[in-house]
Length: 119
Image (cartoon, rainbow, N blue to C red; front, side):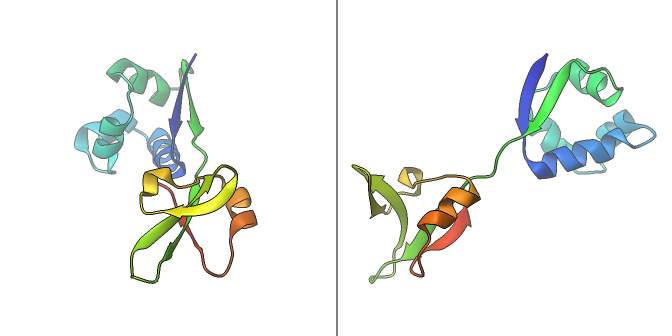
């Protein structure tokens, strides 16, 4: 069984489609915003058909949402918390930011830092 990771919003849309009387028609009509979902997930047409018709050959799991801490420094630039040698530090590059589930991020939050969703 193949496993695909999706966002909560994508899974909600897929469940909505699956409960329609004719989910494949909805896909063809692009009525429910399925076009972007169809292009985002690497499912083949046969996998889409099988999943929507109830054949369980694939599994969809929700990808855990990750967060990061950011703040604006004294010159107005947005910076992100990172860890250098185990010590909290900051960096201008958001790809270097410390990302973690919300519970872990809350442990490091101080009044200076804002929590935001990581891309």
